[in-house]
Length: 157
Figure 1 (tube, rainbow, N blue to C red):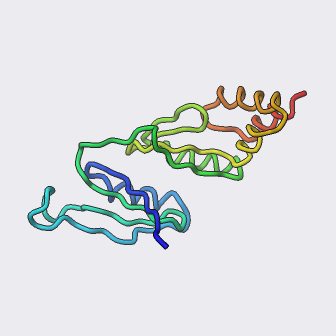
Figure 2 (figure 1 turned 90 degrees about the vertical axis):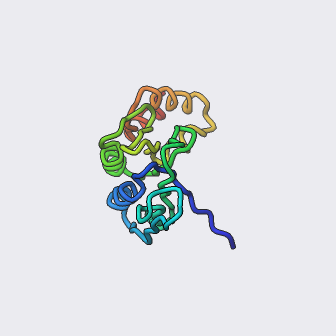
Figure 3 (figure 1 turned 180 degrees about the vertical axis):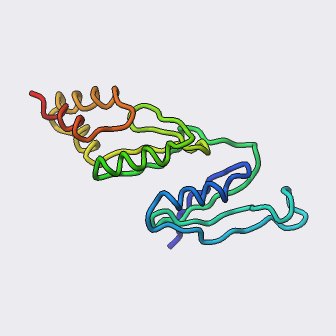
């Protein structure tokens, strides 16, 4: 069965990014570092790719040069069951980057992340459309998502 492995394009920061990401998430490690050989488009011996594991899932960081940059068109979601986890990932991943609205942030490498509780999807898909609208309105006012406030918005009569 084929395996899907996301490849993240960096200029030269792939190894630094992989080290950072693996320090943030449990069950994570650097698996392999490959270097550019002689005759390649980048300087021989510099890091070409880093294969790393984030919470049990494999990723590749490619040092491909300055031609391409991350956009919000691609983000990684961190589904957090507790406010403590939301607070942790919001702080760690946003360090040196920037915090945005509705649980979105960019890390110091420009990669976008969504730090979100699974209960948010449940509330937004509630069969009671007024309840779902209250949750949406509350979320739209937040940067970092607050589970208690989202639930409070849902429960208002």
